[in-house]
Length: 200
Image 1 (cartoon, rainbow, N blue to C red):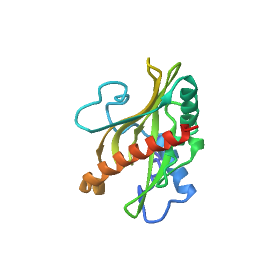
Image 2 (cartoon, rainbow, N blue to C red):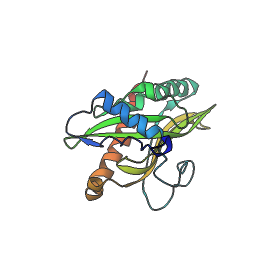
Image 3 (cartoon, helix red, strand yellow):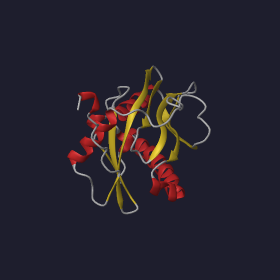
Image 4 (cartoon, helix red, strand yellow):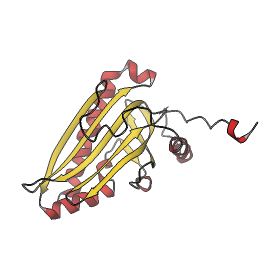
C-alpha cells in the first residue's frame, strides 16, 4: 500500500455519554484540520446568507465609544463569548488564522457533543473585528457562524452573531427543533457573556 492509499484515521464520534478526554478532542481537531468544509457556501455570512438553511441573527449593544470597542475586541480575542457554563472551548486553539481547526464540547440534553469548526475568514480593521468559522465533515450540522463587532457612526458598539445551518447527523435530523433551539440559546448566551466581559 502506497502512502497515497493509506486511509485517514476516522473522525472521533460526535456524541458522548461522558465528557471526551483531551486526546479524543485533539484527535478530532487533527482530523478536522485536514478536512474540507461540509457546505458549498463558504464565506456566506459576509452578506446575504444562502437559502436552504435555518438562519439565526442576534445582536446586542455593548456600549459606546472607542474604549468600549477596544475592550470588546480584547474580549473577543480572548474568547470571552464562550464563557458559557455548558460550552467548553480550549482558548489556545482560537488563533484567528483562516483554516485553523477549533474544537469545542457542549453539554446538552444529558449528552456531550464534540464538534470542530475551521476558521473561514478574519476581519481586523479600525472599527470592526469579526471572524467566521464553518463546519467540516463529522459536525452535527452543516453551515457557518460569524462573530462580529462594529462601532457604528453614532458611537454604539454592536456585537452580532449570525449563522446559517442545517442538521446532518441522523439524531439531530430527528430532533431538528431541539437543535435549532440549542443554537439560538448559544447565540443568546454568547451575547450575554460578551456583555458581562465588557462591563466596567
